[in-house]
Image (cartoon, rainbow, N blue to C red; front, side):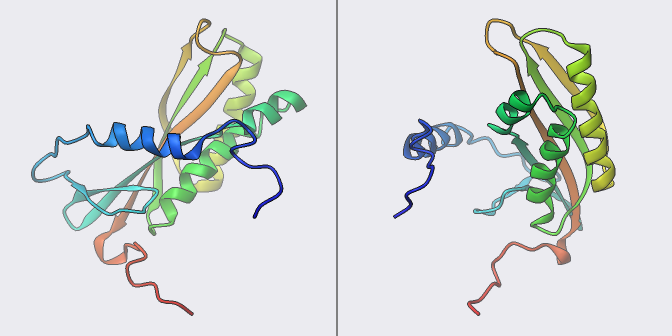
Length: 172
């Protein structure tokens, strides 16, 4: 039994979170037909979309509580690298090449110096991943956000015959 820090100690009920995810996903019943259709593969962090002889992948992730560390240290130029890394990791685990990224920043008030530092990190992460940032949004939400939150979505591409899903993994 783990005796260190846990999600539960941090106030996160994993079972309730899983239940909430299930209630959301359970309502997502529409399926596109033909080109661009989602491929059902459970257990993957990147979603697969059928594009002929290739899959396009999409992965979305945020930096979570790492924002609190950046805030405590007053160091914001690395949090963008982390945001991109989390999304790229989800993309490359299926053997897809990350090619495009969009970011989403929710902030309580505009702050040029802060967003510039976040931008420096995002750009460095994009450079390290050989991936372009093609868009994004800064949402100013003073009544909903205290400080800043950062997330993004990575698009990747992989030939169908090069996909890694874990289906062929064996013990040993």
